[in-house]
Amino acid sequence: MHVTLVAVAWLLATFLTATSAIAGDAIGFRQFQTSAGDGSRKLDIAVWYPTQASGEARLIGDNMVFVGQSVLPNAPPAPASHPLVVLSHGFSGNMFNQAWLAVDLARRGYVVAAVNHPGTTSRNMDKAVGRRLWERPRDISHVIDELTRAPAWAGVVSPDRVAVIGHSLGGWTVMEIAGARFDTARFDADCHANTTLAACDVYHQLGAGVDSQARAALEQDLSDPRVKAVVSLDLGLARGFEPESLGRVRVRVLVMAADDGDAHLPAELESRHLANGLPPAATRYVDVPGATHFSFLNLCKPGGRELLEQEVPGDGMVCRDVEGAVRADIHHRVADEIAGFLDASLPPQ
Image 1: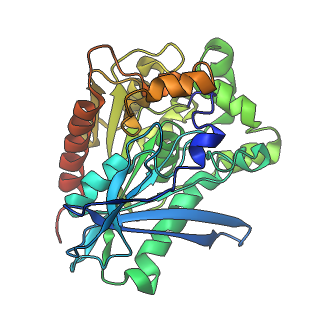
Image 2: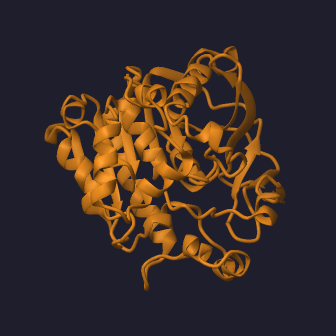
């Protein structure tokens, strides 16, 4: 959610570079582009899924800063109808930000799809596009359409077992999918009272809610009834949700927050505020020990923090966890928590 652009040009050029690797427990992977809505938006989609195939794997997302994941491109999916999870990245992020989680869930039997949100992704930061924040939930719905209706995925994905997971601005996105409604006047007033929140910076930097038409679009119902469970990872913009709409959310919600207090994204004003407004019986709130806001991104390589800091001072925080914490351990705990939640929320048919 921070305003800083965490991926610099030289790093992005390597993000999709694939490197040969030994196939062990690699999972299947496909990447494609599709048109959404009226055809004016092109969506890049990545999908990780269980496979029984073997062969030479490749590293996807490996670069000078981040550790890549071993996959078998275009391998046939394992037989069975698998539950679907869709990932939504944060502001200036991309569909590979939570590749570590996608791989973990795919190994547990889930089909996991991630999408680049035009205008707020590291590959497209066009403000004129990004300020249309209401398109983000629609992107997620379009990915669900693609994975549950396209012939290529027939019999692979269970349309009745769908969940969405979002980090940062992606957390706001998935709550909109769950039925939360945004109140632009409420958010504007709150930003006047809490002037240091990163969510307010992003909202105003984009020019979201700039006129009455945009405000009406942001306040519309963007829910998708096909989604049975959502996971929010250290979200922002939570204080803009209409309290009554939070109380009406009927899907199961897991809210996870970075335990390390960030003055610009404090849990008490974001994740905890969200959880307190949701129906208690269907909500679980978890503080993640040792985590910062960026601990939910991929593992950083030794020296990665220094490389980012040299390129753009301040961006090294992308690789910072709480002192003494190990990001791999944080990932294991988060993945186990999410998997347990999804298993309970999307039981076998």
